[in-house]
Image (cartoon, rainbow, N blue to C red; front, side, top):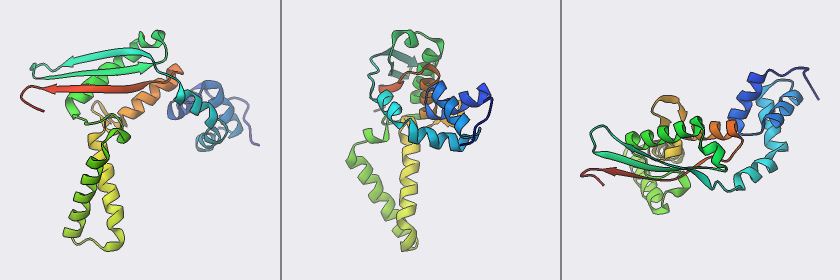
Length: 202
């Protein structure tokens, strides 16, 4: 086992933001990996999977409902953002995330929070359309399935909130923002549901 004497706090924080694991778990993994970030991620996945599962199973019963109305008064959003404790729900970081998610919903028009929230019939309809498109475009048969999967992935990135690129920083997704706050607070953080209203729209 390779170890290093001192792991920089910045490296520990970076690993925590990427994985959502606890600070001490991240530090131990980095020590075992000799400071190698990729190896440390693998160690966390193997050794601390049980802890991550327990965290994921915890109830996020606190939080807040954030509202946003666009300046023209024609688009409005309500979003429920949850965490485990009222203490975290009151923090500036949590409130800012709620505001950012509401703004994202107003601007990017997602249709679901998670991929698994999409109705199966909607996903199947999209897949059929993409399959017909690649046939129409006369793509080689041996790569059609891969192309369709790529098109479906793009659909998710455009239509599913947690998969969408953050409108203020396209290097991050909304899912990345949620995971980063969960890592920072040590609590489960999740977007439970949202509603978007548009005057004269659907």
